[in-house]
Image 1: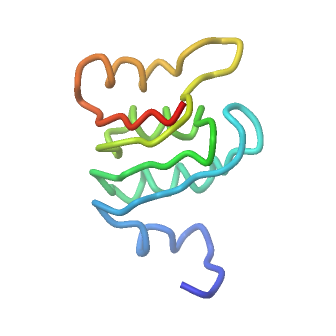
Image 2: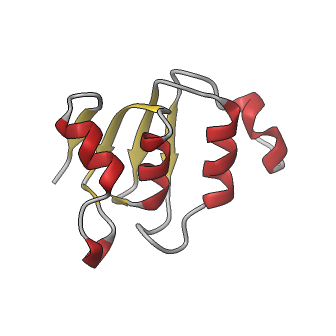
Length: 101
């Protein structure tokens, strides 16, 4: 895709089973409006890829049931500890985790 799109169009492009890379930091500079649109789109079984550290955006997508797998170095809320949805889903075996630490 070689064009810019508006947030309202995200749902047409993000479909179940796709790979989705999200940048930004674990707590700051995260594309939260984009994340909310992905959740609203109803996409499921996404493969999430963190550029380094995933945080709030990844945790929200996991908690909303959008993610089937995640590739990461860490999924944390910095000094606040592990991201709760990530931890719960990973420990329950509901999330395929590819740890690149």
